[in-house]
Amino acid sequence: MYDDVVEGILRDILDAIPDGVYVTDADREIIFWNDAAARITGYTAEDVLGSRCCDVLADRDAGGVSLCEASCFLSRSIETGEPQDAPEVYLRRDDGERLGVAVNTRRLSVGGEVFGVKVFRELTAVGGRDVAFAIQQTSDTSVTDPLSGLLNRNYVDALLEQQFHLFRRVGLHFAVTLVDVDGMTKINDEYGRETGDEALRFVASILANNTRKMDTLARQGADEFVIVSPIRTAAGAEEIGKRTLALIRGSELTTATEEVLPLRVSVGGAVVRVDDRDQGQILARAEQVLDEIRRAGGDGFRFSY
Image (tube, rainbow, N blue to C red; front, top):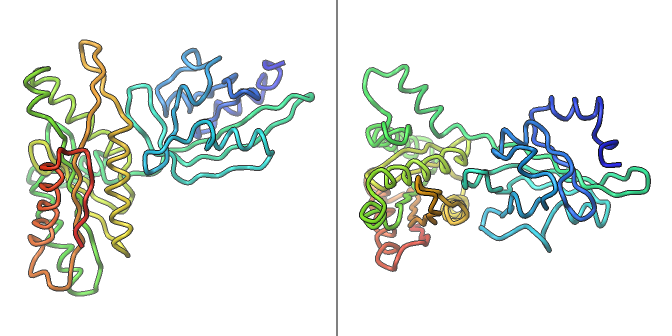
């Protein structure tokens, strides 16, 4: 019966579309997994068929709260028949990274049996490696970081100066969010410098894959990344920090020796103020609250208005 649901032309159509699609039975066991779902998540159909979707993707919201079981969108559609749409969900990829996707779920009834259908697509991100590469191609000076592939401190300094002048001239507010990887000295000492570099690349990849279209992401220092964001309200900037914290908490790096290494970050943010003399003051406030989080043991977020 299950094969009849997804066979023939329907299977070909689902495999041809760019969005991830999977079909489950009433108990949310996966019975179909299209090619785009494999591309987006890294899980092949063979990896997931017969598994419950929550055991595979372990969806979370932007605050890091699990969306499985009681909060599962697909389960809700199966039980009520009502379509469910979520603009921002963070699934777990095969490589342990969290990835932001938009989700739509529906109930499908065939021959008296009930199935669940989930469609998901990647949230567009242009503030990561692709933009860094494009800028590097048209620049006479190096503005990219060789380890992470992100933009570097040179670019951030120029961008912050530009953003501050825009704020002074036309009132365009912006925020700076600093992300520091906790415990890098311990990681380097216990696992080696190569694993430490891999941890930095891992965090950079998560941030690059989930940076909003209007934001700019760069590597700020040895263990530190920076996100520069145009904003309307301070609450919008706080959401960036909280989302970043949740993304890293929900991801796990598997080392070359097959050890699972949970990573954590300290996140500090600040928004431009009318009494700021220059862009350095915004950055200094972000650094100050970041230091407070570090001294408190890390794995937290604080924001300066």
